[in-house]
Image 1 (cartoon, rainbow, N blue to C red):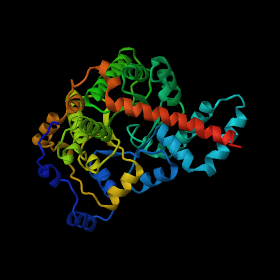
Image 2 (cartoon, helix red, strand yellow):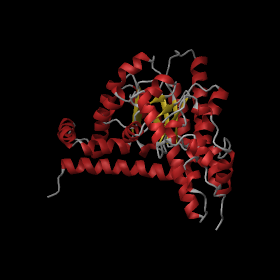
Image 3 (cartoon, one colour):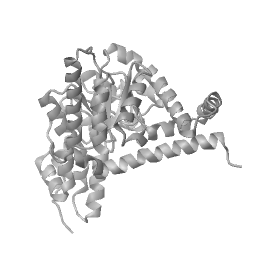
Image 4 (cartoon, rainbow, N blue to C red):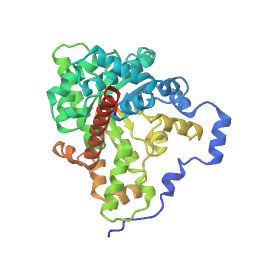
Length: 386
């Protein structure tokens, strides 16, 4: 067993952890939702990590959200939780397309869910000139090995609504697809992405695509490209690695790994003047909202996280993005597991290593499982058990 430093990260947590006094002071000063306050006071954009129509409406009109996302897990959940809407609609789709299989019908429902969510975001899209107001629609994870199929599906999804942004995985094949799709005018949101090395590789691919467009005389526009770093899933993977290797470390440090990676990635994007933004997803703690305020990036919590952040009046600092994660926390994480350096360092992995990173494998399998669950849901609707 290896033991990493276990001194409590008081310097890191004291600046951000909400107390009863700070929550009361925030509420007294301005009783509006803190996410709405932050949206008005900082350049940091709030998106909603769900395309559920009721949740999205609340996120937009009450919490200040200007974007949303959909993926196989989200789509399956939305459809399953609203049978009154989707059971008859799935039957209708099947009747309209009598030779269509379960998967095609399920993805047709996902498209309709995404188009409806995109319509709610259209005012923000128009007001921002296309920078925000985007609905992220994910390519079928079963295509993850086929660059051409990913590009073709991305192009088709991009045409479903003017404010669709298409999610493609930040794998070796996916990054090649991202570059080609971006060149062909698709607005990109990289997904299945957990490390600084991945998001920088995607940022570079988008730059190459935009430069190619300019060289070929293709029209310039605001594509709203974003590059997701799933901060909480990096935390999850490090916790798995720590447990696997029987390493003891103050558990509070592990809550800072994803935060540290996002801050590092953000600095690299600013220094290299990338024309895409970092997007933070996969929330596991409130720091993954509060520590990024002030940055020209996107935070995309699930709806329940937005509710909890606002119900607890979690305080934020308008320049929080500039605050460094304490060096002793980073040192402890490096000492605990080499997986932290792989996630944090710009050169922590080569592109050939992205596909086998633990968080990549875990997440891609989850998305593939959600596809199978959606197939099963459609099957149960069309062929109910006897």
